[in-house]
Image: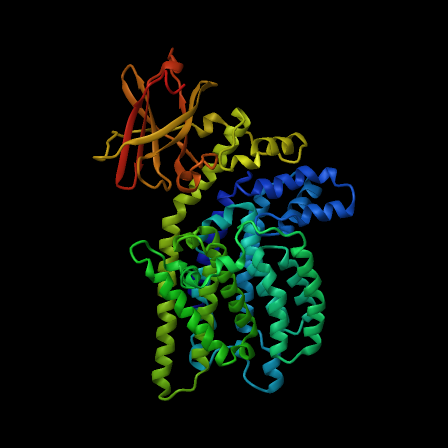
Length: 569
């Protein structure tokens, strides 16, 4: 393969991902950003001592202690005078780029332990049959797995971008440093990872396990001396948000479901509702492969990838325990997909490496199997990358729209809907803005106004509209209508909602801005039902009594209703 073509194929997924993040990042908090970052910055001025500041940093957020994300927001505030939530998204992007670079180093950097023993370095890497085609070709599938948008949420949600992407990136860095005999730095990075996300607590114990398997007992003791007090500090005053004890969650009758949750998460990249068993099957294969790697002592060949896979498998198990009460579909949330993508990428690289080191006769036949495996991986991951980006691009657009709408509703009408009301998002964000710590853009009704569509409302037999209009207001030459709507009995997932107004020449229909309704009691199932229409008024129109209609399309289902003006003011 020509070098220019190879470089182009390698850069394509990376550049597409980077440009998309830069284009759609938006400076506004979302959901758990409020109790984590917004609340932390609001309370920071009242913390006058080092102990009080440390206590704020260490406060538990759900199952995690998200110290790193708070430190980044604090640093941003100290340097610029205000927090920009896009910075958190950019840090997540940087962590993903770091992950890709470290995977490359894991495949190309000589293993000092093997070099000392006079053996071939696995990372130097692959046997002649694959070297002739170049490691760059072998590495392509890893890039197409990492830089695709099944995990679109991690790219644009502030705390998730830092914690969910940062923890595996820092874990990988710690394992690579350990493999390069940079033990002190590995421990330092392990400590940072501990306070990045919940699964970060795995890194220091895994470093201990790795050095124990290498017989490096001095570093085992040193790491234990750091790990034990660090974990004690982590779990000091820790509360279990799930409620039930671990023993209750792991009763024998639930172990089969636990395994299903775990394997479904590990194989989530191939999930499709029509074949719900497929991710479980793929995840089970990766568990068997991990067992094989342990049997052949792959930790001696490529300790970086080996311990990364252990970390990722245990992360999946932690999520499964956390979600033991749920169906397997819960593990497919986009904010977890980066773990799955990295897990599949690292598994693929280990398979390619093990295949390349085999000495099986007849050699030409074995080389053919190697080439076929890599070729199929390139084609498969390229296809997955294309389908994923095509499928999830609309969700990226709507997630930015969600934040824009929340910004508009907050600044003009004192409402925030993409956050549970118990977090008091309006008060907290308003307090942050009054202090000058948050300076978002001023939303423009003109720029966000609804667009007319040539749509003829229809209904699906047997379907009806469920809705509520909780904001109807004339504002600066526009009629602003906001609420929620869905096809009755249908699960809402990014519906298309249109608002119609009756004018003297007939009905006119307009697009709406999407937003979530996490303020609703049933938001767990219907959070994606929110809409806001900004309809330009013309002439002398009685906006208060202007007849309205709502039309919702949800896949192949549709519902329509003309609203009564006196009911929905």
